[in-house]
Image (cartoon, rainbow, N blue to C red):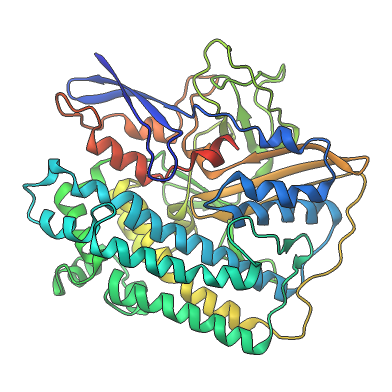
Length: 484
């Protein structure tokens, strides 16, 4: 058996390494290491509660809106405040914009360039993939960057800037939208939709979302081979059998995405397990620090409302700054795949029923979700009533607790806050990559990515195994969120 360390994975930021034990040309075991400590949870303690809305978005320059929303909802829960419908719709617009941009970036800038490596030079699709997707040079990668830049003007209008937007408040959105402005925002959504329909899918979004099962998807692909980047990726995925890589735990968690004024969600919350959906028990969430460079609690794994974040860099048995979140003591996966399965999306549900949760189905779920987001945003814009309130005044209590949940592009994001004497006494965050990139727990059970890497092929002499890269990137690492 040999040891191989792969990293950094630096297309976003490089603070991730994966330690692999390799035997007989395959990964026998893996440890996922987050080697950087940032300490945002400690920074917040002792501050006035509203400071969190300035500090928390700076956890991440990729999903800062999601962090803002989770923080604002935690404070709103502590204050007993409910934003008005316009505030809910505006928040959805901002989350939708950020999540769509993240999905676009993941597909074109982080995931697809791996298929233009020399290892694939003999494949029949390689020349086309290289021309479209090569890092910094592919024609479609450049078009995607331009579309993303234009798309973010929507967030500039709603929040003043991105990242680290400040318009999201416990009581809703501090930025009202006038009737004429709503039309300009709709034009921006339609422009982004046009990019998706012309370049990515080469078909109307409604046509893509109408595909009911894997057989229909294959017929659609074969009817116009390589027409659009989605079809080319489907060809690549089938040729390389990406559905055989990176199996998940079969349990997927979602907090609910696109919250509605009536309390419902476009993407419902829950737990999906082997085809069955059940209600989510938030009280069953715990964080285990057994293999983190963090002090253990005398009580073992703790619910985030009681969580501790105390660095212990020399701790025996530690190998990462990430805790191990568990649901009722069990490993779960989160992300777009969870959201689409919980929503009963027929195409994703059918492909997962036949192939399971893996590299191919994770990416498929992101692209299906990307197709749906402009439609949801069009509805949110139509639902806004100009001159009605977007925000209600909020007075935070001196003493109180709250939990704020949302769905970032990478999955379930939760913030738990406790206020004492008008200041933050404790603030704990469980990010999507905390779930997916978790280390082993006290029982030695590996996290979702660690388990998914087992069995991945490694060619002799391969220092950066392409299959390992595909598995890791299918979970879409964002390690600054992981170690917050």
